[in-house]
Image (cartoon, rainbow, N blue to C red; front, top):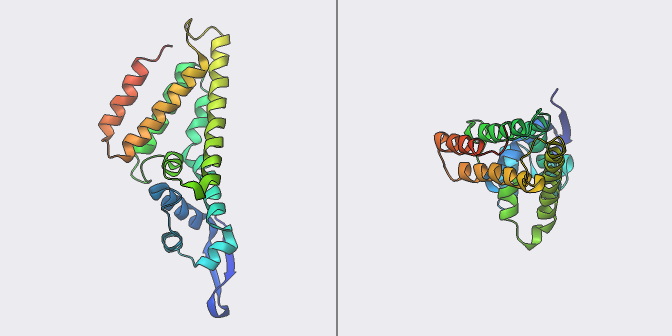
Length: 204
């Protein structure tokens, strides 16, 4: 159920707003613009709250971004956790690629990748944000490497295929889908990229 927060408004009048809906709105702004380009004015306007209410409910802009990133991973990247449960290495790859494709062809969300957009646009004053995104990306890579190492130990991967390099390759393709989607690539173009990646995948 959506949570509702009651916070003081100007002139002492109570202000009620849905915290979950406000956070989802903040995520859309960060996703479209990246961390640094997301202004407080745009954030509060899209969230439908005042700046004092934002600070009271979420902390500062950096804290808000962390919460938005949590939401992004929990809801928008849920397919990544599902992919790790696939019974074969190829199944993992297909779930990841189809999931990434679905995100970029959806009409409900911004295109591109929140972490790629935010890291690419981070200046020195946002090093904390960059470090957090890189840490989370490394965690995702490590989980994928472990899954492919299991496939390697089971004899599923061809001789000479490095599990870590295969994991890095797959994540690079998914990030490339996001970059292409954000740059305006058509659904057909992105689907061809996924189909080609699966056609050359080294396992069946």
